[in-house]
Length: 271
Image (cartoon, rainbow, N blue to C red; front, side, top):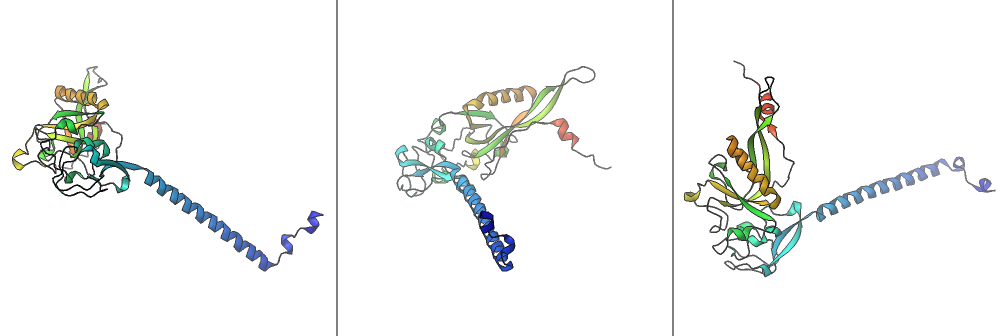
């Protein structure tokens, strides 16, 4: 019978049990390590596949050479390795027809500071398909103190008075709220300067004052911006251009902060 021919555990010498146990632990450890390594490899592959399309050169270009569309190609780079000043593929129309201020090698990613946005360009050339250019009125405070330059990326916040529930007396009430309207939008012009004469997007000291800022927005965001401007004008509130880090690419969900919430967090000073 089968049971008669089987070797029972009890009949295995103690040394043999130790060997079997060691072998089992070794196999288990190997499988666990293999699973960990496979998981890490999959995570790394996932990061590599999360790419950003940027502009690269198909050929070497010399200083002063004007770029045309045939010189450019899109290449995918993992987002964590993409240069913050790289020209994105959807922005390629902005550089076509303009010269470079330094040599760019074949296959090299094109950076904004390598471009001389010369007089051959126009603001229209900087607008890609599906985008619109919207001009916002600003002053010294709402326009970031004169620090804005073409090709910068900024956030735009707004403060508005909105209707809230009536008080105990039944009278209508308004409350001041603040919220982010747009995030990571490109500045195409400050005042009448569009960076067309400045390759690095700078403006001369005598031209630093401006009262308008023109930004690129998605087509579906135009109505939102226009309504926000009208609400700000009607309520005596405002829209603010906020500088952001070039390394900051996170786009979080906007939140509306009422003045009552802000004030409730303030603690009165002791006399």
